Image (tube, rainbow, N blue to C red; front, side, top):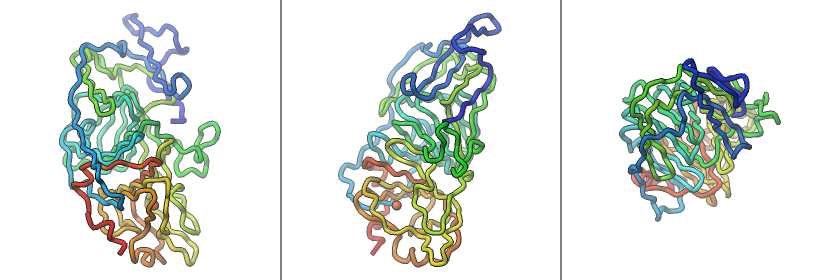
Length: 384
Ligand SMILES: [Fe+2]
């Protein structure tokens, strides 16, 4: 994040004596990106963060790739394949390449264990459900429509208040989720023409540090391997922190879409960018106001992007047969666009109530068996 944030107590100067009430020192930790050159935060713990009692490797559910997947327009129903247990470890991996892994999860359990992804930044879109995200940076509510962004290396838990119908879209990224540069000035501040402002981002609030000593389990994900550490102290033992690197949420309902006289291309709907893919969102908006405007998109060959669309709610103007929780994948190198009748149907319409999340990757995606299992096998023929 481009914004400075401070929570709890920190000493007046970095790297100076900072005593606990019992006269022992707080343990200062620098949590930094790109060595010492990127954004960072400084945290003050009750206990040394590397204190580990025991560690072991445990098995992580592996998903088979669908090696022989066709080059085709793909549509599948993610709601048709549920997961069990904790959302941080039980995910249906759908699409991936070396920079990104896209999964869904329908958790049935709030685990007391802690989780840290050591190789990937995580974006969790809360399609259905609400609860709280707890981390060493503090707590944040998570609500329906939130993007929860958790940087690589953050220890966290995700607890839902009602587990009967929770649905998450999870994106793991090798590089950070950034606010696109075109929406920021040279100092990082959001510009007036950006579709959101600093006030729309929810940052963690720090409760009192956890002082319990017990046996705490921390699951560390490293690619497709999982390690389990036993800690004797609660990992959320922070008295204060400050800096620029921390988890946050942004709700899709706070995105104020940019509209135009004629059809606006997807980059105006961008919400996060990375060097390897972008995340855009389609939200309720007024359509183009030229008297002869065609609101539906034109056919397009985006030769450098695999386009993934996750359908959240509302009536999607350019697609037939999709429903909540559907994903369509339109691979690079073949043109795509509205199905027959959808262009004509859109003429004269003044607004849309759709919500969808789009991920455009600049490297082709591999599909897994989870896609094959829930696929609409007739989708590629739906332009006939
Ligand atoms: Fe497209």
